Image 1 (cartoon, chains in turn orange, brown):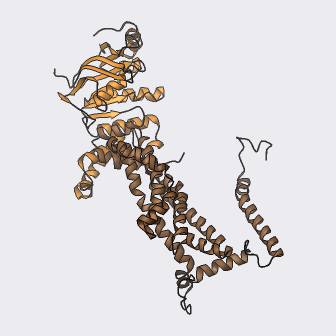
Image 2 (tube, rainbow over the protein chains, first blue to last red):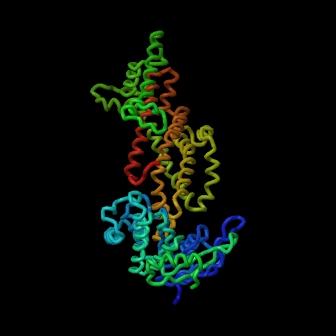
Image 3 (tube, rainbow over the protein chains, first blue to last red):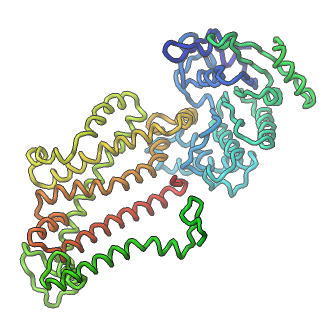
Amino acid sequence: MTPLIRIEDLFVAYGTPAKAVLAGIDLDIVEGEFVCVLGQTGCGKSTLLRLVLGSEQPLRGRVRIDGREHKQPDRTRGYVPQKYSLFPDKTVLDNITFGPEVSEFNLLTRFTPAFYRRRRALREQAYDYIRRVGLRESDAKKYPDQLSGGMQQRVAIAQALMTSPRILLMDEAFSALDPTTRRDMQQWIRELWSATGTTILFVTHNTDEALRMGTRIVMLAKESPDQGSRIALDFRVPEPCPEEDIPRLSRQIERDLVPL
Amino acid sequence: MSPGFLLIHAKPPRAAALTLSWLLFVGGITAYLWVAQARHRDNPEDRVTPTVAQMAKGMWSAAMQPAEEDEAVSVENATAWQQFSRSMLWKDTRATAKRFAWSIVLLIPAVLIGLHMGLFPFAGVFFLRFVLFFDKVVALSLLPILFIAFGIDEMAKIMLIVIGVAPTIILDSFNLTRGVPPEQVVKAFTLGAGDFTVAYRVVLKQILPRILNSIRLNLKSVMLFLFAGEMIASTDGLAYRIALLRRHMGMDIIIPYVLWVALLLFLVDLTMRLVNRKLHPWFHEA
């Protein structure tokens, strides 16, 4: 099967003198996969995500999405960061409809009847998302700082999905949430993935979370502090992964690095 | 009140807070009245510390009579508003307000320059070094150059304000733009926004309340430069009148004029604060 995302011989280094962060990363991700990128703090998980996003360029190697290199972020890839995922000056409703509004209408066409017709339709779609993500309709008029962390992330995911991206990139999206909310969110995103089939690249440092959500786990690790991270493990999660197996598999991954 | 009322965790009761907040005003006014009374007891012709009655009389004439340099007009059958609209106070206030408004309008490009500097790297490298240098130039030292270059008309005074305050506003806008989390910019791109949508619909909208606050904090600088210009080369305006009356020791009008300027500035500040709150309900000041 032709991969949707093809990462070839990626090398990234920062600082002077240059210190390698990622070195020789090769990875193929096919459409519809839910890939969790695991690794310790500072191993380059978020860097890998930014490279796929196009907000950063590698020193060597390339990232191709559907056969094409992307030099900057665009609407083919939705993005949910850990923090600052919503625009603070916009209500929940405006945050969710922002994407389609700005990509379909420019400053001039925003004053045409077509815009208002489309906006009505978008708002209905946004209300549908608001219900689906478990928020009340009355929350639509709230600003992000009036929502809890979990609610904010739900809205951020709805916002990203409104533009129907082929790939959803999530960078430690649940790490700031309390355990209960986090568990709810994991379940919810897994259901969402099952329903939409969107390819998801999910960065986390929590092995249990990766096992609970992903269909595949890619672990980055450094052989020594001076070297860039490589893929130390590429693990396909058994489907379905029973809850009782998670602690055992988690220990096994962390101890043995089970090969693919 | 508990013995720890001066400590960090003290909570002033409402009545105490109200009393304390007005205490310095009351103290200042009382001290002035006491000094004025004492000086007038020694010298009934004293002009340095006019009494309240003298100041009220001076302000009344400023608000109801035309300036000396204007032709006297018949006030028979004129309503109070008609008298006020021909008065010295109105003439001066209008002249100063006009220059002030123009200066504020001319600061809008400064905000946009700062925004573009913060977002577009080429604009940043093009402007930053120059603005940083220009920010250190003492604007008042440019006054003679401005008078030579632009004459003693309005342009020189407005340019003085713009040159004095614009670098601060540019740098403030630049720093505020740089302070917007990069995640927001990346997110906007992934939602389909282009460069200018990101600049004007994402970043500018987020930093606007802070920029308005920055302009509010610079209102006094704007007024300072405006007063400098008016005092040196003008034929009307609040500062011109204060400078003119200084020659005649007209403290009965100078003091009310100073308080009038402070009141106007306070009202502008209050209006901007209310407008800011109304336009940006999501924004909470730190």
